[in-house]
Amino acid sequence: MANFMSRNDLLLLLGFTVVVLTMPIWLTPFGAGYPDLLQRFMIFGIFAVGFNILFGLTGYLSFGHAAFFGVGSYAAVWSFKLLTLDAIPAMIFAVLISGLFALIIGFLSLRRSGIYFSILTLAFAQMSYNLAYSVLTPITNGETGLQLTLNDPRVLDAAIGQAFVGQPVPTLLGQQLGGYAGFYFCAGFLILSFFFAQRVAGSPFGMMLKSIKSNQTRMQFTGFNTRPYALSAFVISGMYAGLAGALLAVTDPLAGAERMQWTASGEVVLMTILGGVGTLVGPVIGAWIIKYFENILSALNDNILTQFWSFLPEGLAEIVVKVTSKFVGDGWHLTLGLVFVIIVIFLPGGIMEGVRRIAATARRSDPPGAKSHQHQPAE
Image (cartoon, rainbow, N blue to C red; front, top):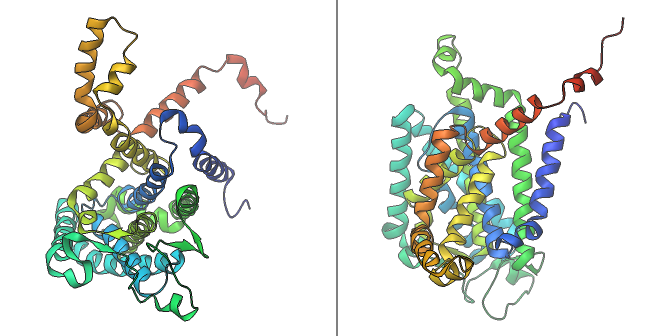
């Protein structure tokens, strides 16, 4: 085990697993313990972890990862329609199609670097969105979106004589993936995705990706070809996005072009920067925070705020409610923007930089005599 994974990596993985699996318990007091939101925490956590493999390790900033997210959703829904409602074939199909799509776009985009690479990925994503919205309507069903119907062929299900009553929903070995079952299904994939990203970051391949980020020009001057490594990172990242898109189709069997908009690509960039670029846990935390704001703060209204501030004097409570109402409901983006500005100004390394600072302060505040208990060299 020591050669396979270091002690620190193993403890990090175990701690991450415990935190994820117990989320329905410790998030309930914060109003976020219901299955639908928990599933989105898992899905966009996978999306952010995969994006960090490209951006965090190689330094290539993509503004087009929503294209792979959307392709994964479309591929999964088509698997449900044509093959079977079982989720596993849909996941495999989505990851493979997204990886192939990422290989094509990455091969073209990685001919440039810096801002030119970012603009190319944005252009490809917008082309994908417009194709899905208006040109490829026989495949994507345009603005209506791709949905499951009782008339879908589902040849594998039909071959074993499996029939469905009512609205078709994805299953796992015949069991419906709704509620907390869907959450734990997504949680399992998040933990596996985190483990794989952990192994990539600590592998020789990951070291090469970090070298590309550190000084790609110097590597090229020494005769080292960096493009295959950057392209591999791009494809892996795209497959992560496809996996996340497929999971979203599993929990909500609908695929629409809006999942490929540039705003979705920008959202995963914010998640990664907010949590900490290049860290393992940071992008996941960033994804959770943004989705929490989107689903919890956006649901608050004046009546809820009035009850919350009811302990204040009447006149003061009205003023506070009027001010805070601008930061919730439709104005939740204002709160997110303020949090993002504060993080960027005071913690350029994201939330994980704050965690590291707190840990360093705690170490410095240890009693002076604590060092005397450390192992001393034998005389």
